[in-house]
Length: 298
Picture 1: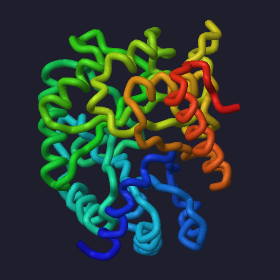
Picture 2 (picture 1 turned 90 degrees about the horizontal axis):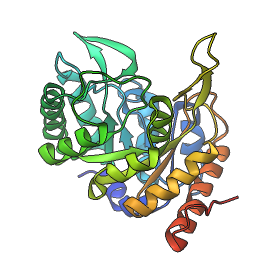
Picture 3 (picture 1 turned 90 degrees about the vertical axis):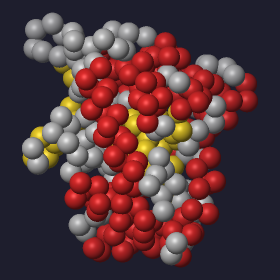
């Protein structure tokens, strides 16, 4: 294990406080900062083929715990995984020794073409077989446990025979993977599809959840006639007030877990991201100390 790997692995315990997503516009600032910015999540696809940014990230990993959140693995792809991409990901992970590696329950590739979206899956036995095979391949290639994130949903499939929580629970049982519970996605999907977000959180296997995400969404009109709204997972705004309440519930369900603030579009200052992380820490302290679902940091 090289010095970067040893230092990053030693900082795994730092994940008890809330981290923030480190996106490319803030990399140079964080690399030059002497202050403690907490732990950081990066999208490895932004660094694999960017030598300068990769060098800065290696320097950052000497001082901060880092996690990798993949956006191009596509474990739901019916045409198989991109093994070259997996090998590039493995090499970066070996350099950084991230505390966690995660990705989405979705598909985004087809026959070598990469789509700029995370597309939904029907929750069937056939889909479960494909995703199980791919999660095993990812974990075998990386030599690390993979965390699978619940998606932001805008539609359901009439062919689904499992609920999303049942699908994820079975995936954990078959692969030994862990779950990344995106609390904002749970709220957004429940609002869009008309189910109870609290019941969804309660249905997930609590002992499998190893990380939580919080991100902003945007309200848009579903069409031009009904006035109905759909929530879009844009990561372009502050976390909505009802999501903080659901986050407190999730903490009481799953216990204290590493939490990450996601903000990818209309990116604010890094200090603003840290302020959102501070609020998450305050919400967690209130929820875990008092067990009061209404206890929010104001």
